[in-house]
Amino acid sequence: MSKIIIKWIFVIFLFIFIGCQENKNDYKLPKPHETSSIIKAVIFDDSLGVYKDFNQKSKLSFSEDLQKLEIVSWDVKKSKFPPKVSSNSKLIQDFIGFPDVPRKFFFFSKLDSSYLQFQNKNFKNFKLEKKSFGKLNLQSLIQLKKDFKTKEYFSFFYCTIPIVSLDGKRAFVQFTLVCSGLCGEGWEIFLEKVNRKWKIVKIHRDWVS
Image 1 (tube, rainbow, N blue to C red):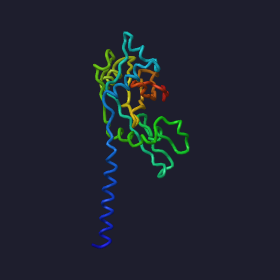
Image 2 (tube, rainbow, N blue to C red):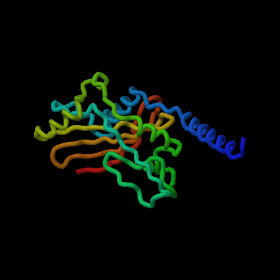
Image 3 (cartoon, helix red, strand yellow):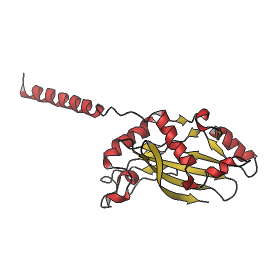
Image 4 (tube, rainbow, N blue to C red):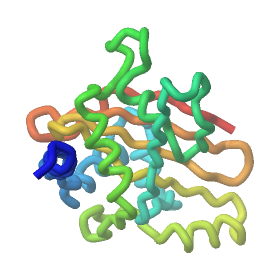
């Protein structure tokens, strides 16, 4: 057997080995009850000052369909300028950090990068179970959008599917109020798991109309 053939066999086995190593991450999506627990913390935490409104005679509606937050990769070595992102997307660097920016300004670790991208790729949709949210007025997003177009002074909330750190102790959610007139708002919500319960640790108002 010639040295060239041996060399190519070695290269092939090397690629197979690398591919197997990449598949050893064995990531799993957060369990449904974990996702629901995060959303409950977002809705019922007094930090947003929203919960009291659900107890009024005219209940505010909430979408049972969580929206997917797109995580966009930016290869800083190939492009000096970041790709465009929409309102329902964020750069991966927004979570794990930008070069030459102190680590303390970012919520997730660089070690979370692959897992965040895994969730982005595999978490397509999520529907909240009405029985798990008591008297909360949960409706489908399709119905809420119809009501928004046909009813006067109609408002509703919706959330993105939470993204969770690799150790399962940190989470991020976008929380949005859609309403008639100029009263819409969008929040970025950061949560940590403390004593097995999710707590909001930071809120950032992303936009207001």
